[in-house]
Image (cartoon, rainbow, N blue to C red; front, side):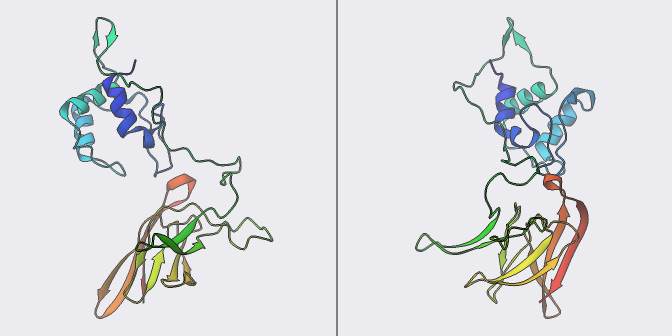
Length: 231
């Protein structure tokens, strides 16, 4: 029988911290919550849950009862009532177990390429206007596949000049595409994967594109760079 705290954890926390509280590097070094009671007390935990910390967002929208139940579960202080778990069970045989990556033993996706794509969708027609492979695993050489694509984390931006800029890929590149055709027009190497959405700004009449090249997810190298390019 699951407690309220366990149910709140399954709904709000399991996708990052895992089914067994073990943590993950999928979203950027998410820490383990095993034996959390040895590292933090309830007031500190409630404050962190309400305000967020690092890559963890705020869960301030949770009710006080839900926050208290969750903290009791994480700190292993859940109260018992007549030797039965406190209230509210999940009435279904399944719970969300977190995001699972379908990967082969070498760490690459266990499906045929392309492993990442950039798509332009005509929202008026509900149709894909164009779709191109995004990113490349340079260590893979397959005669029939010019570009493999990669996992990508981050979105694109579109400029008034009809250019699409996107980083997002594990090959540590930022790319520019033609908005109308999807043709790749330019690329540049970043110090680490740009798992972010670029931004654009102007200064002294010149336009710039900037992206955070932080890496860190899914075993990729980390860095503290922001990289800007002049158009």
